[in-house]
Amino acid sequence: MHVSLSKVTKSFTGRDGKHTALAEVNLEIASGSFVCLVGPSGCGKTTLLNLIAGFDRQSSGQVLLDGEPVAGPGPDRVVLFQDPALFPWLNVAENVGFPLEQLALSTDEKRRRVEEALRMVHLYRFRSAQPHELSGGMRARAAIARALVMEPKVMLMDEPFAALDAHTRELLQQEVERAWQRTGATIVFITHDNREAVRLATDVVVMGTRPGRVKLSLNVEQDLPRPRDPYDRNLSLLVTRVARELQIEIEKIAREESDDRPPPQPPVPSRGPDFGRDI
Image 1 (tube, rainbow, N blue to C red):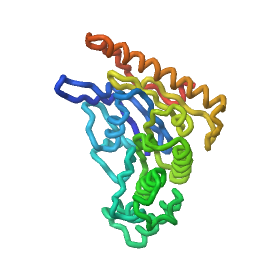
Image 2 (cartoon, one colour):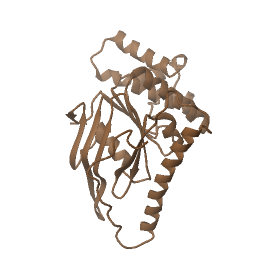
Image 3 (cartoon, one colour):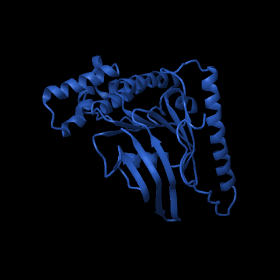
Image 4 (spheres, one colour):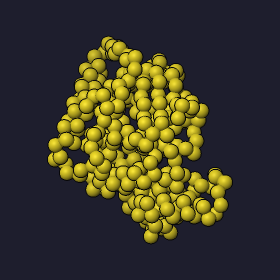
C-alpha cells in the first residue's frame, strides 16, 4: 500500500499556547518499502505515525493510502508500540488471535492465521504459554505475530525494540525483516538507533524539529538481507551521515533551550525530498 503525505501540518493547543508538531510535511512511502523514521525527541515521529494509523487528524494537508484519504483506523493498518501489551489472562495463541474476533472469519481460517503467524516468528511451540512465562524478546515476537495475523498492508512500528538488550534486538530485527519480505507489507518504523535504521530500511527519513519536518531522505542501496558486519563500510558511511544530520538538530535544540527568547521558526520547505535523490 502506497502512503502519501502532502503538505501535512499538525498543531496542538496547550497551556503555553499553540504548538506545531508537524509543518508542511511531504513524504512518499512506496508500496512494499521499509521506511525508518529517525530524529530528535519532539520532532513529530509518533504524531506522523498516528496520522497514518488514523488515530488522529491533521490540521491541514492530506494523508492518503493508495490515493484515498485516511478517515480513521482500519484493519489494513496495524500499530506496534514499545510495550507488547499482551493480555495476561490469555495464552500466546489466544493473544495472537484476539484481533481476529472482530472479523467475520471461519474458525478454521482464524486457526490457520494464528498458526502461520506463530510459525513466522518461531513461537508455535509456545502457543499455550502464558505471557509471564515468556522472555521480553518472546513477548515482543508475540506482539509481532498479533500484527501479522491481521495480514495488514501497512505496519506502523513505534520503537518496538527500545526496551530490549542488544542481542535480542538483533534477533528481532531478523524476524521483522523476514516477515516483511514474506508479506510484502509497507513498514514505517520509528527508531532512535541510527544503525538499526540503516540495517533495516530501504529508505531512512531524518526528521528535524521545531516544527517537525522532513529534513533528509536517504535510499539504502544494498541488497537484502543487510550485511550484519558492524564494520561494513557502506553501512558505516550511511550511519555517520544520519548521525551528523541528527547532531545538527540536537545542537540547534540545545541552543534554543539555553536562550529565553522564543525560538526562531525555520523556513518551511515547499515539498519534501524524493527517495533516492540524495545518494
